[in-house]
Length: 191
Image (cartoon, rainbow, N blue to C red; front, top):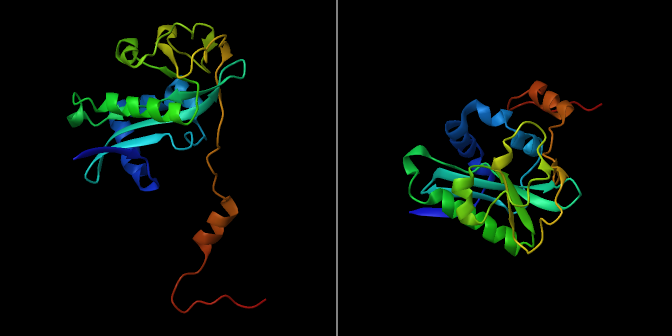
């Protein structure tokens, strides 16, 4: 049975494999990726579709700021396992993301995607014409959706990443851990 739930730490490898299968290496070259690099998704806004223990879909939202400082969210990537497409799963993930973002009080969501697909969820290029991505993008694919009326009024300028930074590992701790003696009888010596 398929369910949509919040993403868990244990979903990491399966989600990444799904995204690799859906987008390949090109996903790292997209302008949207510049807004996600070294960041964590917006709190409570990462979703997984699963059947049993298998991850079959993903959608995530990211904190961003529009050029004039307006807070918003970036949707993406949205991906569904190839053998599960045409079942409405991508749409269900997008609707869940929109619904939860609205409940959490966010005013707008932007994305770079297919206008024909995302227009059914209320996304359009109507209020994104004065916005820019940090890198090349197709203007007609930069879409927005207001969750509260007027949230994209006056939106202009470069879109910038916001939100929580991804924790970086402490290199000294990793080296110490990698070089520490292992074994049952090992005890540290007193200084």
